[in-house]
Each structure stands twice: as C-alpha cells, then as structure tokens.
Length: 185
Ligand SMILES: [Zn+2]
Image (cartoon, rainbow, N blue to C red; front, side, top):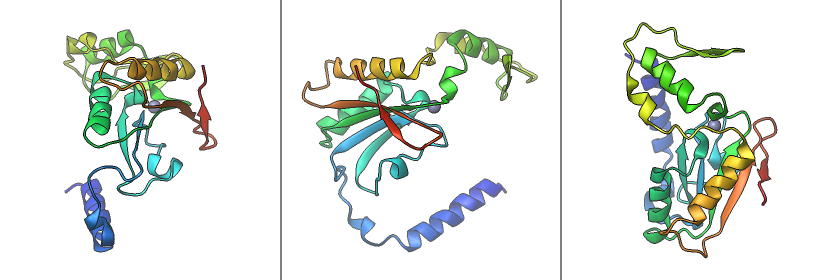
C-alpha cells in the first residue's frame, strides 16, 4: 500500500463530495487564456494567477519551456478551444538552471536512480546500469531566466501555426515573494 496513494484518494473523495456546479463546466476555458509554466512544486498557477476550474489552460513542463509539445498544446488551445491570450511564466531558482545537456547525459549514462546535488554540482550514486539515450535529448536547460522567457515567447510568436494577433506575455515568478515580474524587450 502506498501512503501517497491513500492520501491522494482521500483528498479526491473530499473534493468530489463538494463538486457542485463544476459538473456543468464547458470544455473551452471560460476566461479564454492559457499559461505555459514550470512543473516546479512551489508554483501553483491556480493560486498565483487566480484560476478556478474551467477558467484557463495550464500547460506545464520542466522549465515551462516552449517545447514542440507545449506548442502543440497551445495551438490546440487556440484553434479548437478558443484561447486568445497566452502567458509564458518561468521562475527564479529553477532546477533547469542547475545542469546542462552534457551533465544530464552523463548522469543518466551512469544510472537511472535519483542523483544528488551539492555545491560542486550533480553526482550520480546509483548502482546502474544507466543508458546513453539521455545524450540524444535536448533537455531545454536554462542559463538565464529572462533570456529563456524571451526565447520561448519569440519561438511561440514566430511559429507558423500561431496567429500573429494572439498576445504572448513573458513573466518570471519570484519564488521568494510570489510575485510575477514582467520580462520586457
Ligand atoms: Zn522550474
């Protein structure tokens, strides 16, 4: 038995018991917008951006990067579900700033177990075997948050399947204050 599984199912039971009108929500986001943001556990887009069920699309991945798959979701979000304003929100202290493609490739080639990190960087202590497959993935790491936000906004805006009149706003969420800071330029 997994303790986490029990906790999740108990929480879901309480949530469903008070589900109310949410049963009647339509599929298209009621407020017509989408957020692309990092999967970091400290970020809760529903709270930091004031979302209720049915309000907006939230697309999350490591770093909140405009990967091919994130763009796939955004195009569906607009083309089929009518969102017409998008936010790219990266954040301070992102784990994606702590490694490079080379570091990740090395770690995975040594073992698939969870690595450890200290002042000198990442270390693999797992027994192995690992896999070389990690060397063939672009992990979309980040060296500078403002730069990565600008690059992702530009990639989305420049995509041939994205209409030019959909505004794409770039922000950095500050993990120390909870504030969204606009990335300009
Ligand atoms: Zn992050």
